[in-house]
Structures are given as C-alpha cells and as structure tokens.
Length: 109
Length: 115
Image (cartoon, rainbow over all chains, first blue to last red; front, side, top):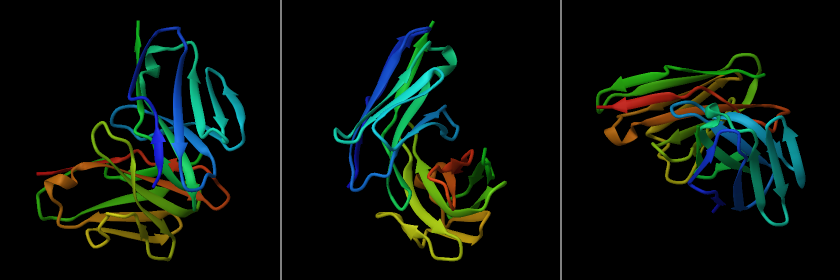
C-alpha cells in the first residue's frame, strides 16, 4: 500500500512563513504534487516536483528529496486567504495519485 | 489552463434511487479520467480510473456494480451511483489527464446527499 504522511494542522500568523512536510513510502514514484483545497471546493494545483531540489513560484516553494522520500511546501508572506487544506499527492504509476490526509493551515491576523 | 466541469454541483436524492454525475474536459481531450470521493475532513480517495472506450479500473473496496463509470468519449465521463444510501453521501470529484500530461486537472466537485 501507499503511505503518505503530513501533519494534520498548522497555525501561523499573517506575514509569517510556514513549512508543511510530507513523507512518503510508495510503490513507485513518478513525481509529487502539492494542491491547495478550500472547504467544499476541488483541489487547485500548486506545484509539481519530479527531480530533487527546490521549485520556487512566487510565495510558494516546494522541495523534494527522492532518496529520503520527503517533500515540503513552503508558504511565505502568509495571507488570510492562504487558510486552507494543503494536500501532498504522489504519482505512483499509471498516473494515479495517492493523497496524504491533508494539512489544515490556519492563518491568524 | 485546462478546464474540467462537473454537473451537477449539488444533488440531493432519496435512498434507493440512482444519481448520475457528469465530468467534462472543456478544452482538451482527456485520455484518462479519475473519480475520487472525499468524506468530511478526509483526503481524496481514488475510486476508479477510466480510459476512453474501455472499462474502468476500480480501486480495491470500490463496488463496480454500485458505481458505474462510462467514458464514452474523450471529453466526457459519467459516474452513476446506483441504489444510493445515506453512507454514499460525499463529495465526488473527477479529474482528467491529457495524453502528454503528467498533471491532473480537477473538476469543481459534486456534493451528493442521500436522505
């Protein structure tokens, strides 16, 4: 089976930085996605990593270490609208996605 | 970017009836579509994978006779929940992948409530 772990909840202050970690043990690996999901809505794409290293996109960055089975999503200059659930998803084969349980981030004023 | 639509966005039905949910890729041809289910405060669970013109592949524990999937064209897949029960109440989300794409594009989801 697939095992994808991420923290359940995180809280941070507006303007701060938050790092969401994701560790995985999966049968096969063809890349890792991070998605943002607001309550009652579908996930929206944030990043995709398939090679080791850091991918930066504006306020959001994602890092991958394949040898360690580890990724993180870094959110900088937090805004209230960043309060959402963040999903780590591994592409395990045949383009199937296995999702972690999601991390709920709450941004406080 | 690629757009995927779902219809209906919300549906309430009575126990024992069937409900059909449509998933359409609006501006690209989706060789593969995926159906997920998400219960409150839980993550997305893959139910099945469907390829145009062939039978869907169901994940372990998902009843294929209860969740009927039809992928009749490169832009449309349907999920029919047959003989729905209250425990089938959930958020159903589809996604679509193009032929040369590693990314899946998600539909907006369908909230099903079975009374």
